[in-house]
Amino acid sequence: MEIIGLDQIKDTLKKIDIIPAIEKGFVIYSSGKAIVPPIGELHFKNPPGDVHIKYGYIVDDKYYVIKVASGFYDNPKLKLSSSNGLILLFSKETGAILGILLDEGYLTDLRTAAAGAIAAKYLAPSKITKIGIIGAGIQARLQLVYLKKVTDCRDAIVWGRDLQKLRRFQDEVKKEGFSIQITQNIEKVTSSCNLIVTTTPSISPLLWANQIRKGTHITAVGADSPHKQELAANIFEIANIVVADSIEQCIARGEIAHAIKGNIISKNRLVELGNVISGISPSRTSAEQITIADLTGLAIQDIEIAKAVFEN
Amino acid sequence: MEIIGLDQIKDTLKKIDIIPAIEKGFVIYSSGKAIVPPIGELHFKNPPGDVHIKYGYIVDDKYYVIKVASGFYDNPKLKLSSSNGLILLFSKETGAILGILLDEGYLTDLRTAAAGAIAAKYLAPSKITKIGIIGAGIQARLQLVYLKKVTDCRDAIVWGRDLQKLRRFQDEVKKEGFSIQITQNIEKVTSSCNLIVTTTPSISPLLWANQIRKGTHITAVGADSPHKQELAANIFEIANIVVADSIEQCIARGEIAHAIKGNIISKNRLVELGNVISGISPSRTSAEQITIADLTGLAIQDIEIAKAVFEN
Image 1 (tube, each protein chain N blue to C red):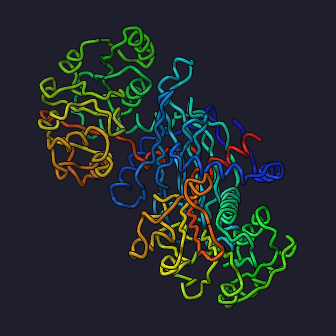
Image 2: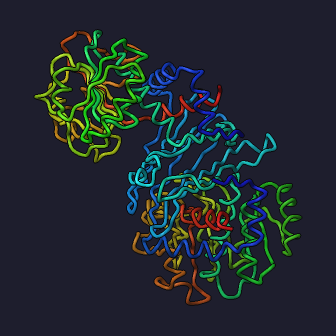
């Protein structure tokens, strides 16, 4: 049994490109070859927090995986990251524990960013004019870092409420080679960008249908719980393609869940990211289409990233 | 963060009596002061196995706990224990991991045995004539070891199908100070014992109503999944008191689930072990009553035993 700390995980990640592994995971998931039960959840008050337990296995694989990822939103007041957690790899032949990845939530952050890049690769317009990022936290920065792997666009704008946080974000992202504007006016994002990534833990809509121009792709990664929402449900009325990381999971939580509850879209309009990747479902066919990818985070991503780190 | 191996766990357990901790856990659970979501489960074929993920927290506590316990039933062919697993303790103030108890399923075995002793303490007749054990595995032996803490009776009989296994069991249990008979005829157990503990992974009934004498208490610990069953549902017709470790959980899995599905008993006849311990619900009031405790295994037991080990 190996216990792998965060520094060692970061070292290992320098040697591997996780995007192909995560892409493969989505395809396996959508082909029905993974067993991924509903997410386990705990919620806390005083201080506020939540934990997601995502677990499962690939039928032909030798592992089963359990991922624990928490968010404790008052942690920054204590100068701690709000994210924490770990990933456990077990033998699915004997039940023995093989590896404990003490990633403190880092692998969850990365596999989410990788999924955003994959969504953009298959759904964003071929010519990305400017990248719009909603939110200025860890995930906002990582989305830009991973988008570098799938687009040459280095022109970006970030929206947030806290000017100080935006300025810090701007400094960090410049180091990644981006020309980055900051704004507190969300229409500055929607009027100039044809790739928008939403990364906040908002519980009420930030983007509305009347703001979204033709030819825009939106990837929504912030809403991973039933009560969270970044996109007004009416955006789904004008979308040409709506992609879920998991149709089953997105019906229960995330942006799509709100649109389904509001009878804005029906389940049969949804396609799954794994099927878009494998070509079973259509990806963008014109520069005019509006496309949405709703990423609620799948255990298959945790399985794939954990395997990639463990085996390297 | 502390990683505690099995040897260290066993050393620590020599210093503590887990029964009061587990008793307290049942009372907290039944008083509604614990958050314990439904069990997470994975099932495997080739080789056959299953994993239970039990998790939760006590509202006033500083921890949240995730327990992983697996059964891989072909492991003995590889000279490995079929049980495995671990328990994780996290801070419910920051989400930080505090302890990893690499118990390999041992703490699950012990907290189950402790619950059996607690059920006997509150429900068995005051004078136990002989203890009957159904099954001759690890849990069968541990039930006897823990019953020593709540009764002076050292006269026992064990039923099993495999004579060699029964003889090995007999040798082990003699060392614990028991006078122990072995039998392959289950009526030898029911005709001589007024405390019977069933500990097998059977998927069809082993005990029937016509075999059970007045004044018998039965603790059923084997059936922890919806498909497992050790007691014929008609036993519930003749029972005076039916105790569940968790009413909610026993309606979904275990002996009571079969009796409810078969309309043998209704939910309002069930009482919870925590309420029996605290005196809210009645325990045995006469030597003639037939009582049943159905123990499906609660996360609260895992929380309490993990805390007891971690804090010592």
